[in-house]
Image 1 (cartoon, rainbow, N blue to C red):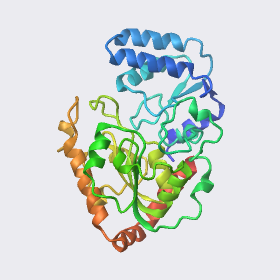
Image 2 (image 1 turned 45 degrees about the vertical axis):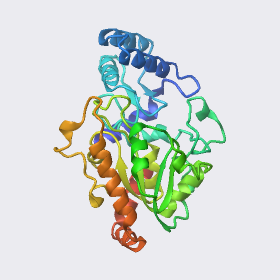
Image 3 (image 1 turned 135 degrees about the horizontal axis):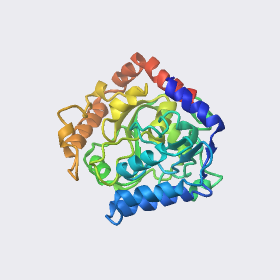
Image 4 (image 1 turned 180 degrees about the vertical axis):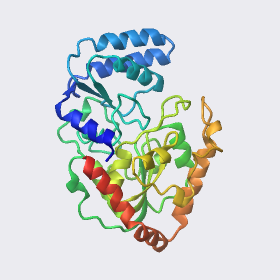
Length: 329
């Protein structure tokens, strides 16, 4: 654990939580400002002034959780960070970005808030802020008993709830998965859409490898951002080797946190200098996605004994990933 992480954890022990899911007023205001900025209806100076006014009434050290995963626009998050840097009290933002800001919690420290996030009972249901209040929802990062009795019996798991063009392209061009697969945006993969989130965790527990489609920077791929969410955390807790496709420099940033991925092991080291210049604007990431498809298909073609041998070789690394998360949870 780094000194920054220790300092932030100590800060959380006494800091005021500015709002909860029951009254997310600041969160909604920032979301509205983000929408106006991205539509060209509000400039940066106006955004900055609005954010400044929003925090005038804060009179103690505080944390503002973003109750969804992303800010929606990296530039608005930068402005927010700049504004609260000048506030007389220390304010941290809790959000799932892996980018480094002066006033954004470390992604692993942010598990303090992620563990309170409830997930819909059905994996085919897209959660809303209001729906996360349902008492029958699963707490996949708080109830660690969900990850008891792990027994690996299948090659891989690949589950995606939310549609995006990138994810549709990937699923439409994959060979049939030897294991569990689900894509909420396609009829091709809806045969097991009735699984509960708890049952999905059981699929992670059975799988030697989980292919993770992490949250993407939306809607503009020019944002050099990447995120780490329950999509990664849950398979790690289920002791699965993770292969991840996500935002910019996902693997590099994950591993800087101490989280081992198996991207390089299976040939998916796509954020190297060769690809970086091609990342930006509204460019289709077809080259990246095609490489990801190739890698997943190659994994799929391995025998279960070959995958089991890799897993047994790296079992300590798998366990270290889990121990790291549990330490912060």
